[in-house]
Length: 155
Image 1 (cartoon, rainbow, N blue to C red):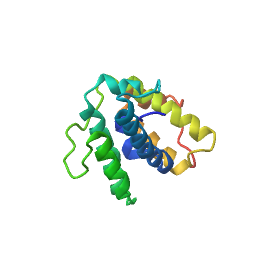
Image 2 (image 1 turned 90 degrees about the vertical axis):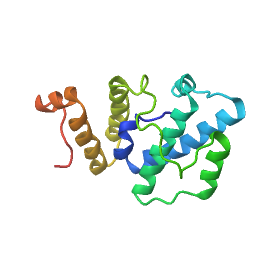
Image 3 (image 1 turned 135 degrees about the horizontal axis):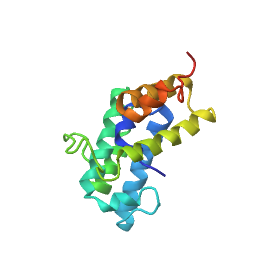
């Protein structure tokens, strides 16, 4: 269970984006039922106002809609019931979890996705979108590309 760095949401591969939506629902249900999260990788959610998590869910929802994926009404109703997530309202914070979703966490998420790609879990075309994003958003990553330490695949 994990929340991908919010900056990665627009370039997450299809499988990871759809899984992230399921994770949001599962996390919201856990918060509703027990008042907290129960997994080491997401427990930091409880260090923030619930609005941060609602904003994150909104970013995932927006990306699903942008890509043309159907979002079940029943899931939207559950998210509203569980945490008060209302997809019709504007997202209040487009950069949620500021002290958690840092450059360091972005790098951790990148390496997790890289491992998935290396094990053939992410196709080259989707992986290259992640690489392009990192090239534009990380000075350290750009330097690694210049030094030949990172290479695009399928070129």
